[in-house]
Image (cartoon, rainbow, N blue to C red; front, side, top):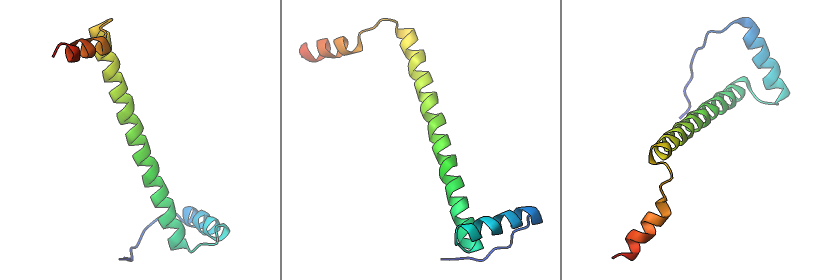
Length: 82
């Protein structure tokens, strides 16, 4: 479904959008849709990157608390003892 919206922006920004959309051989609406989709995708990538960075930090903190614990060795010993 396509909806129509009204947006307020500085004239200079609209002029830049018009030049860019013309260079891309796209309508103003198509250009704005692609630009917003790209922006949202980049924001999601950044959220995911930050999430991975936080997970890595947590893993490092846990590893530091465990010290030189041999996780693989423990798992193998546990598995072999049953």
